[in-house]
Amino acid sequence: MPNEKVLIIDDCRVNVLLLKHVLSKINVQADSAGSGESGIELAVKGAYPLIFVDIMMPGIDGLETCRRLRAHPFKTKPCLLLLTAMGEKFSADSVEEVGADGVFFKPIVPSQIIDVVKETMGLSQ
Image (cartoon, rainbow, N blue to C red):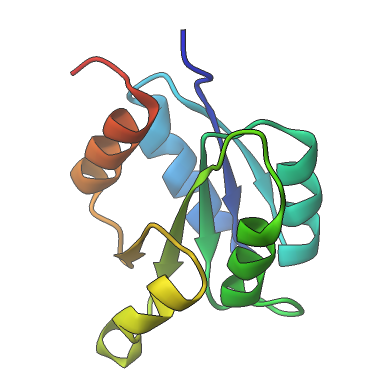
């Protein structure tokens, strides 16, 4: 049985609650961290198959958080998905540069999140 818990790194509590609500529809639990620093700490301690990282955060931003997570020697490499409200201002090259596996633009589309989570975590349709 796959680990059905993911990590959300986002400083906006409303965004975290919204994402947790979407994930609950497919029985996936989520831990959360309000900063890049605390998110990295949680990610290193836990074995999360999937980590959502908001780009715009105080302190270590989401891009640097993603770089640091990708550089960590995890036993199993987590899927890293960026979250941004930057729209067209966001460069798709940034996804590859920081080692992320994809990006979601806010406002999120619940069905897209659900599809990616199911695929990544091997959950039945």
